[in-house]
Length: 468
Image (cartoon, one colour):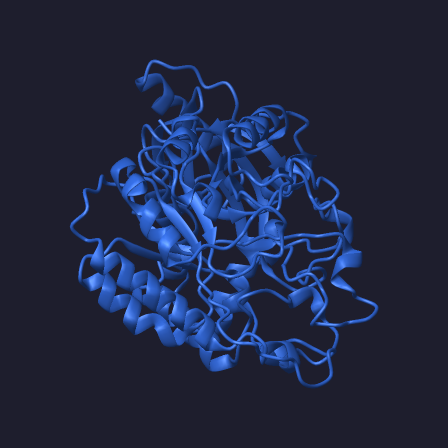
């Protein structure tokens, strides 16, 4: 289960947690050091480096299942170095890179091997890679098996046009053809669940968010989710290894929660994520021309925002993911403010921890701090590790787990200034927002990759995570 601590010390050796020591808050620094030396001596180990952050919170490093790093081919959008630097500064220690918007998309062995080599050279945090399941490989079991054997953790598809050449959307026939391979291997299958099944012509001022919102009705998600649940029901007798989930990414329609819960209660392998932008904003927060918050599926009204938050609290939605989808600022058409033409993606990887913490405080202001800290750790660390097959190494602060840690202060404002931004392009809706939850330090497998005073480490100590 997710853990988060104040007054905590973690003894680390060779990248793994050796022991967790809970300290009394009344101990002085010298007393804490002496206690740790005794604990290390009892384990027949020397204490070499001590990092003391006083009363700060220590949480498991965040695991983000849904990141577009855009390399190779679109490094001017973001790139591995920029994305993993932003992750380190934000307390994220493991990223899962999507098969798009790299160019070419990661849909065959050649593109997967190229991306893996780049990750090994450039990553500052640990990175796993999703392969793309598209019409061109959906009916080719050998191709899908080859991608898994090469180390892809699982697959991602779109059920609606992705807006990227070389990554066509799938339909029911493609999904049904591919599922037996994924189930036999226990490989997760992530799906952008929208079916654009009618011609919704935009009407109104393109600078008005409601004009764009009307072009992405709730029925797009509803029809897609209904199809996916039906496919799972009709294929429930197929052989399946543990680890397979049909995972709905960035759910934005709270009306679907009861249908999803019913499917989960039936024992269907259905999991769900939503994004911090869906619980942190609603349509009334989006001013005319503020295309920084354009995404698909879209941010909806306050009732929907509260419904998604309740779905997280109820466990129907298992966790959160960024869907970090940056682009050059020019593609967001900020001067024009045209929601219909602007790139539909939100840049914000660096701010996921404070954005989530601030949303929890806003939507559940009377909750006690400990329960809120545990929810954040569950949504961002424990649950994503369960869904992605990393539950034996990540997502917890426990003996034998990777020493992936974020040290942070829930009461201090995060630095959201442009000067501290690590992203390639300085256009994020989180810039200069007052977000609580300042990251003080980030450790990946025991190595410090960020310190709020010292900045980013120059080391590229992130590792490629491959399917075993």
